[in-house]
Image (cartoon, rainbow over all chains, first blue to last red; front, side):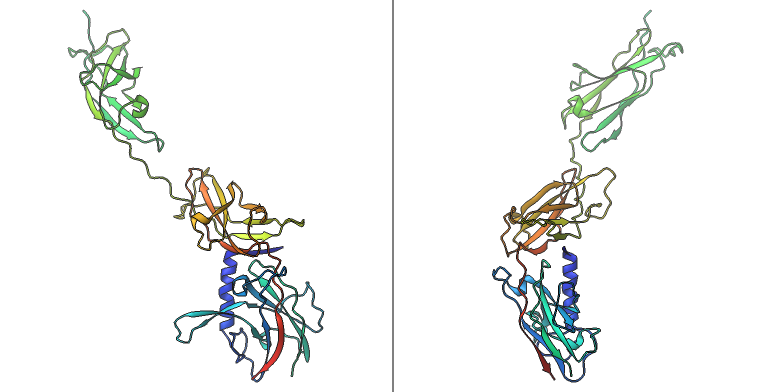
Length: 149
Length: 253
């Protein structure tokens, strides 16, 4: 059963935006997450936000998505009982070039080194789920092999 | 010789009571009669009772009794119940009667302007419901049922706690207008005494895959309603998003 409240959504939204604004880690165009700033090259998972629901009805990800869940496993067998390693807001606010306005933009990538308590394994598998504003979750994205070096 | 009790010396409005908000009780009182008209004290073995009247006739014709044969020196009345015209002038009078049957003359008229009723201000509106949450689907069948919940309203909008015994009911709405405009509100449930309501999106004709906003209003037993609670956004009856696509891991320097 899923539950959400207006307050939680509001706070969650702000928290997510702050989360993403607080550390960029040199990871690219999209605001990034908290945690120590990785030194040297970083691994970034990138994706294309969904634009349809499961029944093929069109979806506006900026309007209808709340956040993504990023999952980490040592094997590619992600299951519904897995716990997400981190949540990433689906939409982030960034300051406009003139610094006067907040521009909302879809989040499309995330620096993996920012995930807390990562296993030390040389290679891991990464997957994601999209979560709608009604908290309905997508299936898992096709697993990605992350070779750490 | 017939002794006639002395005229009542004074009669007048002493106090105004307003009980409850939409009724008003007034009190007229007078001095006790203790002597005959010649100044002789009334014997201790005799009792005095009074009858009070009102009339619109300054000449004290067409009297209407307010209280009859009472021993107290005051009585209460409701101008509305007595049929007194608001804003009009009425005249009070009274007479004393001894238990031996001797009666006084009517006291001099005491005039009084019946006040126009000033509507008392209504109670403040109740607080709007807070902490609205949506649970669901709470059914496992083919028809989805969702449960909307909220915290009970226990105070007025000015944070003053509701009085004991005051009851609150709730009206639940949904709308496709994020501004929750009055004209767009569609009722999910009304006069709900609990703090939860279950609904079926299909039965409510909520369009699939479209955002809807759910909100609640509290209504006191006086009929006073709160503002709408902050609406929560929800995408109705969608099948959930597809997962992100095109995933890849890249190195950035």
